Image 1: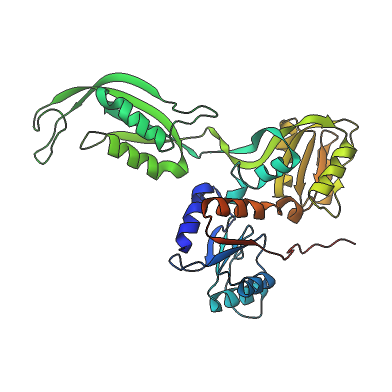
Image 2 (image 1 turned 180 degrees about the vertical axis):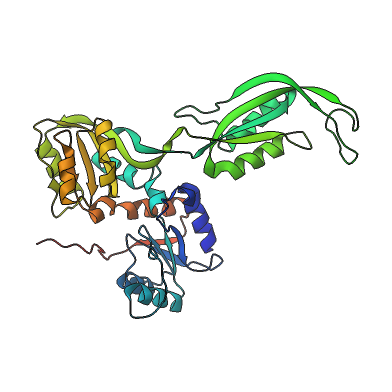
Length: 364
């Protein structure tokens, strides 16, 4: 199997366009055209991980955290990153990472946390803005249904839990074809009036290529008149963190103990107990302290994340319970996301979970 087949699949699921500006998701090392014998899945890329891949004859390391995160000015054996790069290249091992783009989708990191906790009514905690586009296209009346169907099949027309959404206005279009045209209706050189429908629909930014291609293929005109507008609406399918509800409320202490066991946490740091039951739960894998206010605004009883600093625990202000389960602990099941997806979609492809615990933080 070619590396580009695997990366194309992953990027269709979690488009790179949805990674944060500071991030560096995507292909870190490797030739997209190279043959891949198998993948080793890990949270972090370390020297031990590369050694494991060599030992198991797997020439793709698939990680959540990118190896190349900051700027790399030199590649030498004097640094850990340099040694990893050199060893990977010498052994023809590709490295691919899906980080905040995987955090941003419902089926990603935070969705997995919600699944483990057992949350219902799951929603994105902080949906993104500015990632939706509006398409307006003018179509002959008799062809409007065909164009609409093509647009919907390509990924347009979704608003929340509704699909096939569009707005349609009937009107009259005018045009005159020049000398080198072959008009679908009318005659070149003559002004023509045609009954048309103005179709308006929305689509996510990452589907732009598919939507435009589908529209052009379904449209009968030689030259298609259409407009694309940016819109600032929230896109509820993409964003950071998630929020949902427990099926039955539980006490704070009971919930924290279950959380510690489920995520194999050595310790859970938390803010003051509030003496009320836990029903609504907000989560963010990794370092999510900046989303605390959104969790409070969403009326969550508890916010689960990692990497909270000392003074940030004061920000709970007796409105919410903060539970810091650890960065690694909150993201460890990302490996299962990769594994399940690859096994399901490439059943004959060799996929293995790393046996190495890459968590750099230890507890006494």
